[in-house]
Image 1: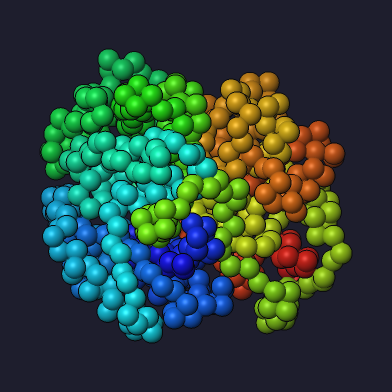
Image 2: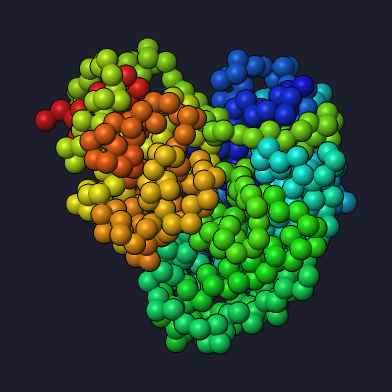
Length: 565
């Protein structure tokens, strides 16, 4: 049975699932070039089908989620999505009543119209009919069940605890679930008003960053604060954990107003630190309670809050978890996969399997790449090379950075060695050059590394031998190596590594050559994009980014591409 999964909200996307396996998955942003695009994922649906050489008639089932009132209204009136996107990304002038608009948003998002589920089906059916999908059975899956299914059915755990936490979805901000004997049982539901995800979003907004996009900057900025004791952190009292529930002291609107007051006489870094510690303290307690209550120590985690890698490090070390799996596309961008997998589970009783990689996107033939390069022949020169890995290693050893485009595109927010910008991890000069001339990010944002699995124990503190292939976990670099690898750590010595095994043989070989030359199999690996843009998808995207940044070298499959002087 082939199931088309779609998500038409924030970070929209589509996928095709067959017999419990993900065949292809793409987010709309990669095709529209609009970061975290919102709305019906028409391009993603077409791209998924074309890549697997399918037609709409080859799909038996369609799975979607989203019965929240705001989503139903936006489907009916797409203008709402377009305007919200412009406001959220700061692409339009600040409205005269922006603060009031935000407070209305916090008031309205709590409404989940489950009893209007049939309207959601009707809306999706109408949109699909324009793409020649006829008479398809449509399943509407709950937002948090979709998050849970995305993690459970890709974890490989036969029995596990699954916790979902985000801002809000279909009226909830979180759930606690048990998967056992082939059944998912939800044992706790956390209301939207008690949302730690919304709390972190509010902090992001108050500090002047973009909601639903820049929360990671708050996490990074927090490391630049002088630590303060819990007794001097007023944000801790905003929440308490009661068993398997999180309870907020204030309503969403009241909390926003109180946060504004506290920020008025609090430095930015300290405000970020207090918010990060509030997140860590309460979610750690929730995880401990859930593990104690169920006796289950294999835990899955999904939802936007699971993108906080500093939190995930705390959970891994201190929650008594045995194995912690975070779904690589943990935010709303993973809902299409979750909805499809949950539907497959309900209809066909699929079992979890362990994903070894997330190379679920598009790739391109040598002929397609050559045609693209010919189109840019006035600006770049290129040659087909026998050993692109050896050529890349030679360029990197000489302290160049380069663009690296190989195979199928990664699914999710992280570059994992197929759409990456690479450099040596022991060159601070290259790090500064990347930040100033290519990425152009905030000064406090760190870069991250890819590390050979065999070297992870040498480089990382508290490494437990369980490799994180997907950059979902924070670690500390060993103190004696922090100066050497200063280009891939934050100011506190923390890093977010991709630990590379056999899932990407070409990338592993590159790291092995780097190890032969430098002693360590480690590279700085950042996403192949400009700051604020999606990761590149096509060869054309790659060349255009090369030209915009005046980057000298790119390895594009088997081609060495250079700027013309």
